[in-house]
Length: 440
Ligand code: IFM
Image (cartoon, rainbow, N blue to C red; front, side, top):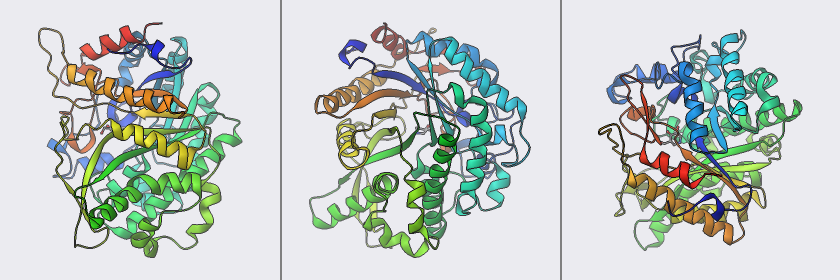
């Protein structure tokens, strides 16, 4: 490692991140069915039709996994909670076993001196709510607020931070326009509604948590840097449209009380009536902003229907999932998010990391590519801090190899290798290097 903890401001937080459906094992502990179980059971959606029924069996191995977080000298663990584990039908009857699980998780973190950073929703919508239209139905904001209340009455008193929804772009665009995530729709009207309702639900959850007296509440958005594929006005306009849909819709909605003009061009006719009146709820004051950053895209104009662009293969080195490695994009987004949206709020890099074709050889995993990736992105974080951006934390995706959604189990993002047959955990070289760099 080319850095240690001392190269960052006093109190800067280093963390590891995971999510419920990707690690817990949804077949265990009385969790209800989710739209990811349905999506994965439909041939062609997920590599080998794999699902999160067992995943890393974190449900039964939680203590061992929390020891791994502490063993790397992290300050914080970012986890998510499954709506369907707490409320198997999405509404109504509570699964006490599910609440007990998250209660033990929070206590286990505190016992190890780790800060619990919770995200309420990381994509596993209960199937009975999907039957009612899921994110297309405005009522989801109320259902989500009710889930928030049930869960946070139980664990909210001991959390270090909480955010309602992980990566609203994935909930809205990736799942309803591109059809690559559950529920797998490709429908512009569904997209517009999901893109709006996900922010409304975010706002209602913040209101609910404030009502319970909780503090340190934030939002977690994923951003992807858009580079024009050629030096033409058309390509620049296409990249700006991509940027508006991916990056600015959510940040502007939450912090600026409006949606970007380039997105309204295509989505406004499909938004629900009265959408402009929801910005007071959507814009509930926050205490921090979380950014998830991995890559950039080269964008070219396209004569087809709105949004009139297409992605072009880029020349930079790529990770196991084919994403170009472009650390400068993280610097750019930290500057932009501070200047245009968060305006002085602490910013946390809530996810950053890479998938690599890691192999266990003689009991060890050498992953120098991951170390370089982390070092390069941390260098951009330090650059932004030096330029006055209040970056307060950096969390690695992910603690361990896990279920990479439509890509199944073969893409390895973890600091810890998981053998998905035996479920044995083996810390990789990057884990050991981080543990040394973060030693107090
Ligand atoms: O695995 C995902 C995670 O669920 C959300 N952010 C990006 C990660 C890598 O694709």
